[in-house]
Image 1 (cartoon, rainbow, N blue to C red):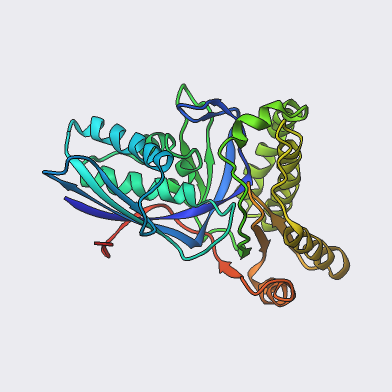
Image 2: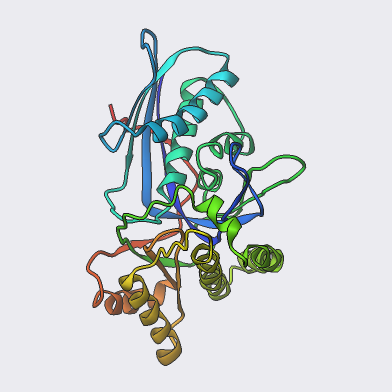
Length: 321
Protein backbone atom coordinates (compact mmCIF):
# COMPACT_ATOMS: atom_id res chain seq x y z
CA UNK A 1 0.00 0.00 0.00
CA UNK A 2 1.15 3.54 -0.75
CA UNK A 3 0.36 6.71 1.20
CA UNK A 4 1.53 10.32 1.02
CA UNK A 5 1.32 12.80 3.90
CA UNK A 6 2.10 16.48 4.35
CA UNK A 7 3.13 18.11 7.62
CA UNK A 8 4.27 21.60 8.53
CA UNK A 9 7.47 22.70 10.25
CA UNK A 10 7.14 24.40 13.61
CA UNK A 11 8.12 27.72 15.09
CA UNK A 12 8.83 27.28 18.75
CA UNK A 13 6.91 29.74 20.92
CA UNK A 14 7.91 28.35 24.31
CA UNK A 15 10.76 26.19 23.11
CA UNK A 16 12.14 22.94 24.46
CA UNK A 17 15.80 22.31 25.07
CA UNK A 18 17.30 19.41 26.98
CA UNK A 19 16.18 15.79 27.15
CA UNK A 20 15.57 13.87 30.36
CA UNK A 21 15.61 10.64 28.33
CA UNK A 22 17.48 10.98 25.03
CA UNK A 23 16.51 7.54 23.71
CA UNK A 24 12.77 8.10 24.15
CA UNK A 25 13.12 11.86 23.59
CA UNK A 26 11.39 12.80 26.82
CA UNK A 27 11.96 16.51 27.56
CA UNK A 28 12.39 18.21 30.92
CA UNK A 29 9.35 20.42 30.42
CA UNK A 30 6.27 21.09 28.28
CA UNK A 31 6.67 23.24 25.17
CA UNK A 32 4.39 25.17 22.81
CA UNK A 33 4.72 25.91 19.10
CA UNK A 34 2.83 26.97 15.99
CA UNK A 35 3.12 25.26 12.61
CA UNK A 36 4.25 27.30 9.60
CA UNK A 37 2.11 26.69 6.50
CA UNK A 38 4.84 27.79 4.06
CA UNK A 39 7.36 25.29 5.46
CA UNK A 40 6.00 21.87 4.56
CA UNK A 41 7.35 18.36 4.16
CA UNK A 42 5.70 15.86 1.83
CA UNK A 43 6.50 12.17 2.32
CA UNK A 44 5.40 9.12 0.33
CA UNK A 45 5.68 5.66 1.90
CA UNK A 46 4.99 2.40 0.09
CA UNK A 47 4.98 -1.05 1.67
CA UNK A 48 6.64 -3.37 -0.79
CA UNK A 49 7.26 -7.12 -0.76
CA UNK A 50 10.67 -8.29 -1.94
CA UNK A 51 12.75 -5.43 -0.59
CA UNK A 52 15.81 -6.63 1.35
CA UNK A 53 15.78 -3.45 3.43
CA UNK A 54 13.94 -0.14 3.76
CA UNK A 55 14.77 2.31 0.96
CA UNK A 56 14.84 5.93 2.15
CA UNK A 57 15.58 9.12 0.25
CA UNK A 58 15.34 12.66 1.64
CA UNK A 59 15.27 15.62 -0.74
CA UNK A 60 16.45 13.35 -3.52
CA UNK A 61 19.48 11.99 -1.65
CA UNK A 62 20.34 8.95 0.42
CA UNK A 63 20.30 10.03 4.08
CA UNK A 64 23.32 9.85 6.35
CA UNK A 65 23.69 6.82 8.60
CA UNK A 66 22.43 8.88 11.53
CA UNK A 67 19.43 10.25 9.61
CA UNK A 68 18.46 6.78 8.42
CA UNK A 69 18.77 5.36 11.93
CA UNK A 70 16.38 8.01 13.27
CA UNK A 71 13.87 7.29 10.50
CA UNK A 72 14.13 3.57 11.14
CA UNK A 73 13.21 4.06 14.81
CA UNK A 74 9.82 5.47 13.77
CA UNK A 75 9.29 3.01 10.92
CA UNK A 76 10.22 0.00 13.06
CA UNK A 77 7.91 1.07 15.88
CA UNK A 78 4.98 1.40 13.48
CA UNK A 79 5.88 -1.89 11.81
CA UNK A 80 5.84 -3.50 15.25
CA UNK A 81 2.42 -2.02 16.07
CA UNK A 82 1.09 -3.27 12.71
CA UNK A 83 2.59 -6.74 13.37
CA UNK A 84 4.21 -6.70 9.97
CA UNK A 85 7.68 -7.37 8.58
CA UNK A 86 7.18 -5.70 5.19
CA UNK A 87 9.91 -3.28 4.13
CA UNK A 88 9.08 0.19 2.85
CA UNK A 89 10.21 2.65 0.23
CA UNK A 90 10.27 6.24 1.48
CA UNK A 91 10.64 9.50 -0.46
CA UNK A 92 10.53 12.74 1.51
CA UNK A 93 10.81 16.30 0.28
CA UNK A 94 10.97 19.57 2.21
CA UNK A 95 9.93 22.96 0.91
CA UNK A 96 12.76 24.41 -1.19
CA UNK A 97 14.18 26.57 1.59
CA UNK A 98 17.76 26.64 2.85
CA UNK A 99 18.17 27.73 6.44
CA UNK A 100 19.14 26.42 9.87
CA UNK A 101 16.60 26.37 12.67
CA UNK A 102 13.42 26.15 10.57
CA UNK A 103 11.88 23.10 12.24
CA UNK A 104 11.97 20.70 9.28
CA UNK A 105 12.92 17.75 11.46
CA UNK A 106 9.51 18.15 13.10
CA UNK A 107 7.56 18.19 9.85
CA UNK A 108 9.74 15.43 8.39
CA UNK A 109 9.03 12.93 11.14
CA UNK A 110 5.37 13.94 11.43
CA UNK A 111 4.84 13.31 7.71
CA UNK A 112 6.85 10.08 7.87
CA UNK A 113 4.81 8.82 10.81
CA UNK A 114 1.42 9.58 9.30
CA UNK A 115 2.31 8.16 5.87
CA UNK A 116 3.89 5.03 7.33
CA UNK A 117 1.11 4.30 9.80
CA UNK A 118 -1.49 4.69 7.06
CA UNK A 119 0.50 2.51 4.64
CA UNK A 120 0.64 -0.19 7.31
CA UNK A 121 -3.14 0.06 7.82
CA UNK A 122 -2.92 1.43 11.33
CA UNK A 123 -5.60 3.72 12.74
CA UNK A 124 -3.85 5.53 15.57
CA UNK A 125 -5.39 8.56 17.23
CA UNK A 126 -3.21 11.71 17.16
CA UNK A 127 -2.17 11.24 20.80
CA UNK A 128 -0.87 7.73 20.06
CA UNK A 129 0.87 8.65 16.80
CA UNK A 130 2.47 11.74 18.33
CA UNK A 131 4.18 9.47 20.87
CA UNK A 132 5.68 7.47 18.00
CA UNK A 133 6.89 10.37 15.84
CA UNK A 134 8.42 11.92 18.96
CA UNK A 135 10.99 9.10 18.85
CA UNK A 136 12.45 10.62 15.66
CA UNK A 137 12.26 14.29 16.64
CA UNK A 138 10.61 15.60 19.77
CA UNK A 139 8.93 18.55 18.06
CA UNK A 140 7.36 16.20 15.50
CA UNK A 141 4.69 15.50 18.11
CA UNK A 142 3.52 19.13 17.78
CA UNK A 143 3.93 19.18 14.00
CA UNK A 144 1.63 16.17 13.80
CA UNK A 145 -1.29 17.81 15.61
CA UNK A 146 -0.71 21.22 13.99
CA UNK A 147 -1.92 24.72 14.69
CA UNK A 148 -0.93 26.14 18.07
CA UNK A 149 -0.03 23.07 20.09
CA UNK A 150 1.55 21.89 23.32
CA UNK A 151 3.85 18.92 23.85
CA UNK A 152 3.48 17.45 27.31
CA UNK A 153 6.68 16.17 28.86
CA UNK A 154 4.75 13.85 31.16
CA UNK A 155 1.00 13.63 31.34
CA UNK A 156 -0.21 10.57 33.20
CA UNK A 157 2.94 8.73 32.21
CA UNK A 158 2.78 9.70 28.53
CA UNK A 159 4.57 12.34 26.45
CA UNK A 160 2.44 13.55 23.54
CA UNK A 161 1.09 16.66 21.84
CA UNK A 162 -2.32 18.32 21.78
CA UNK A 163 -3.64 21.20 19.71
CA UNK A 164 -4.52 24.28 21.77
CA UNK A 165 -5.97 26.40 18.93
CA UNK A 166 -6.64 25.89 15.24
CA UNK A 167 -4.38 27.67 12.74
CA UNK A 168 -7.13 29.97 11.49
CA UNK A 169 -8.42 31.02 14.91
CA UNK A 170 -5.50 33.34 15.74
CA UNK A 171 -4.74 36.18 13.32
CA UNK A 172 -0.98 36.03 13.27
CA UNK A 173 1.27 36.30 10.22
CA UNK A 174 4.95 35.45 10.08
CA UNK A 175 7.81 36.66 7.91
CA UNK A 176 10.56 34.04 7.83
CA UNK A 177 14.19 34.90 7.06
CA UNK A 178 15.99 31.60 6.35
CA UNK A 179 19.70 31.84 7.18
CA UNK A 180 22.06 28.93 6.42
CA UNK A 181 24.61 27.76 8.97
CA UNK A 182 27.25 25.03 9.16
CA UNK A 183 26.92 24.72 12.94
CA UNK A 184 25.87 21.24 14.05
CA UNK A 185 23.20 21.20 16.73
CA UNK A 186 22.87 17.43 17.20
CA UNK A 187 24.48 17.54 20.66
CA UNK A 188 22.83 20.78 21.77
CA UNK A 189 20.19 19.10 23.95
CA UNK A 190 22.90 17.45 26.02
CA UNK A 191 25.10 20.53 26.15
CA UNK A 192 22.48 22.91 27.58
CA UNK A 193 22.34 20.79 30.71
CA UNK A 194 25.84 22.08 31.49
CA UNK A 195 24.70 25.71 31.48
CA UNK A 196 24.65 27.31 34.95
CA UNK A 197 21.32 28.88 33.93
CA UNK A 198 19.51 25.66 32.94
CA UNK A 199 17.79 25.21 36.31
CA UNK A 200 16.77 28.86 36.26
CA UNK A 201 15.14 28.26 32.86
CA UNK A 202 13.14 25.35 34.26
CA UNK A 203 11.86 27.59 37.06
CA UNK A 204 10.97 30.38 34.58
CA UNK A 205 9.08 27.93 32.35
CA UNK A 206 6.57 27.02 35.04
CA UNK A 207 5.05 30.48 34.83
CA UNK A 208 5.57 31.34 31.17
CA UNK A 209 3.91 28.17 29.88
CA UNK A 210 0.73 29.12 31.72
CA UNK A 211 0.94 32.68 30.39
CA UNK A 212 1.32 31.42 26.82
CA UNK A 213 -1.63 29.04 27.18
CA UNK A 214 -3.79 31.89 28.46
CA UNK A 215 -2.66 34.16 25.60
CA UNK A 216 -3.55 31.47 23.05
CA UNK A 217 -6.94 30.91 24.70
CA UNK A 218 -7.61 34.67 24.48
CA UNK A 219 -6.25 34.77 20.88
CA UNK A 220 -3.97 37.59 22.03
CA UNK A 221 -1.48 37.89 19.16
CA UNK A 222 0.63 40.58 20.84
CA UNK A 223 1.08 38.58 24.03
CA UNK A 224 1.84 35.36 22.13
CA UNK A 225 4.53 37.07 20.06
CA UNK A 226 6.01 38.98 23.00
CA UNK A 227 6.38 35.82 25.07
CA UNK A 228 7.98 34.00 22.12
CA UNK A 229 10.57 36.79 21.77
CA UNK A 230 11.46 36.72 25.46
CA UNK A 231 11.74 32.94 25.35
CA UNK A 232 14.12 33.21 22.39
CA UNK A 233 16.59 35.21 24.47
CA UNK A 234 16.21 32.83 27.39
CA UNK A 235 16.83 29.79 25.18
CA UNK A 236 19.91 31.23 23.50
CA UNK A 237 21.31 32.25 26.89
CA UNK A 238 21.53 28.62 28.02
CA UNK A 239 22.82 27.54 24.59
CA UNK A 240 25.66 30.06 24.72
CA UNK A 241 26.59 29.23 28.31
CA UNK A 242 26.82 25.44 27.93
CA UNK A 243 30.21 23.76 27.86
CA UNK A 244 30.43 24.07 24.06
CA UNK A 245 29.57 27.81 24.21
CA UNK A 246 27.46 27.46 21.06
CA UNK A 247 26.48 30.75 19.43
CA UNK A 248 23.72 30.06 16.91
CA UNK A 249 22.94 33.58 15.74
CA UNK A 250 25.03 35.39 13.14
CA UNK A 251 25.43 39.07 12.21
CA UNK A 252 22.37 39.01 9.90
CA UNK A 253 20.24 37.50 12.67
CA UNK A 254 21.26 40.31 15.01
CA UNK A 255 20.62 43.05 12.43
CA UNK A 256 17.12 41.68 11.87
CA UNK A 257 16.45 41.44 15.60
CA UNK A 258 17.56 45.07 16.02
CA UNK A 259 15.39 46.20 13.12
CA UNK A 260 12.36 44.45 14.61
CA UNK A 261 12.93 46.20 17.94
CA UNK A 262 13.31 49.53 16.16
CA UNK A 263 10.01 49.03 14.31
CA UNK A 264 8.27 48.24 17.57
CA UNK A 265 9.87 50.72 19.95
CA UNK A 266 10.35 53.71 17.65
CA UNK A 267 7.40 53.34 15.27
CA UNK A 268 4.87 51.52 17.43
CA UNK A 269 4.42 48.60 15.02
CA UNK A 270 3.32 45.36 16.74
CA UNK A 271 6.13 43.06 15.64
CA UNK A 272 8.40 40.60 17.47
CA UNK A 273 11.16 38.14 16.53
CA UNK A 274 11.63 34.50 17.41
CA UNK A 275 14.55 32.12 16.80
CA UNK A 276 14.83 28.40 17.42
CA UNK A 277 18.14 26.50 17.46
CA UNK A 278 19.66 28.25 14.47
CA UNK A 279 20.23 31.73 12.99
CA UNK A 280 17.01 31.83 10.91
CA UNK A 281 14.54 34.42 12.16
CA UNK A 282 10.75 34.25 12.47
CA UNK A 283 9.19 37.73 12.53
CA UNK A 284 5.69 37.68 13.97
CA UNK A 285 3.11 40.41 13.48
CA UNK A 286 -0.55 41.01 12.61
CA UNK A 287 -1.88 40.62 9.05
CA UNK A 288 -2.62 44.36 8.67
CA UNK A 289 0.97 45.32 9.57
CA UNK A 290 2.66 42.57 7.59
CA UNK A 291 3.44 44.47 4.37
CA UNK A 292 5.01 47.34 6.29
CA UNK A 293 7.22 44.93 8.18
CA UNK A 294 8.14 43.06 5.01
CA UNK A 295 9.24 46.26 3.24
CA UNK A 296 11.59 47.14 6.09
CA UNK A 297 13.11 43.69 6.47
CA UNK A 298 13.66 43.39 2.72
CA UNK A 299 16.31 46.09 3.08
CA UNK A 300 18.35 43.53 5.01
CA UNK A 301 17.57 40.34 3.08
CA UNK A 302 15.90 39.34 -0.18
CA UNK A 303 15.34 35.80 1.06
CA UNK A 304 11.95 36.15 2.70
CA UNK A 305 9.03 33.77 3.14
CA UNK A 306 5.57 34.80 4.32
CA UNK A 307 3.51 32.31 6.24
CA UNK A 308 0.24 31.88 8.03
CA UNK A 309 -0.13 29.24 10.77
CA UNK A 310 -0.31 25.70 9.43
CA UNK A 311 -2.65 22.87 10.29
CA UNK A 312 -2.16 19.25 11.35
CA UNK A 313 -0.42 16.60 9.28
CA UNK A 314 -2.73 15.23 6.60
CA UNK A 315 -2.91 12.53 3.97
CA UNK A 316 -2.71 13.98 0.42
CA UNK A 317 -3.30 12.53 -3.03
CA UNK A 318 -0.15 13.64 -4.90
CA UNK A 319 2.49 10.93 -4.48
CA UNK A 320 6.21 11.59 -4.91
CA UNK A 321 6.68 8.34 -6.86
